[in-house]
Length: 238
Ligand code: GRF
Image 1 (tube, rainbow, N blue to C red):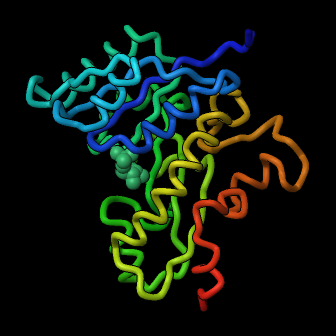
Image 2 (cartoon, rainbow, N blue to C red; image 1 turned 90 degrees about the vertical axis):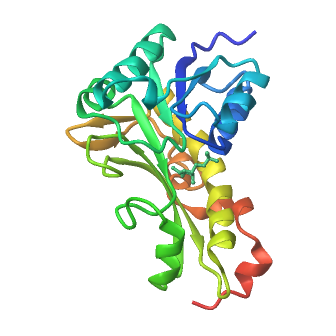
Image 3 (tube, rainbow, N blue to C red; image 1 turned 90 degrees about the horizontal axis):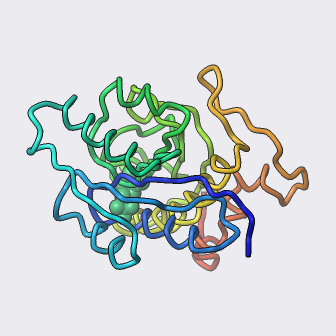
């Protein structure tokens, strides 16, 4: 039996929960350094709630409409996280801005995945905006959460090409595949204490030194090659 002490992770969602599912799948590995102790959604009809429950993970909705203010809503979520004994909070498609007191309380222990290469394309509709801007490279970012939206220190990024002829759906699907590979890697680093938020930056320590190892895989799409259709990539003309 593994003697690994796993970090207790709660996931906040608002919808489909595919990134949540990727984290649950990673955490099913006995050697993964985190366990998912609960899922909270701000939407009662979030599909992700059913997926989590089916896997035996406590899942609950805490709806904004049931609370008098944003502060009261976040306080209720905070109380649920405290009850779960969560040590790390992973936002996975949580579509509501969190209040500053909540973020400050969890700062350094709360991470988010954003479907773009930050600091470009903060906010919504990132795939449409990437196409409109004619970007040839797009991707996703896992970062520590700070009160400013999509602004916290970057932990890990994965790049994917924008193909000629891509529409929003095709590009979104390619990025989403990369998200599902990147988020478990990034959470692992946080759970192992190999990345910490210090002085407003992500500070790394104890990463494997070899070129194909953790340090390079943080930034290299090569480590995420399954996320890219290699035949299509060969046809790609920058
Ligand atoms: C993902 O693209 C994530 O990056 C963004 O919202 C989407 C959530 O999708 N923050 P899912 O619920 O994880 O499937």
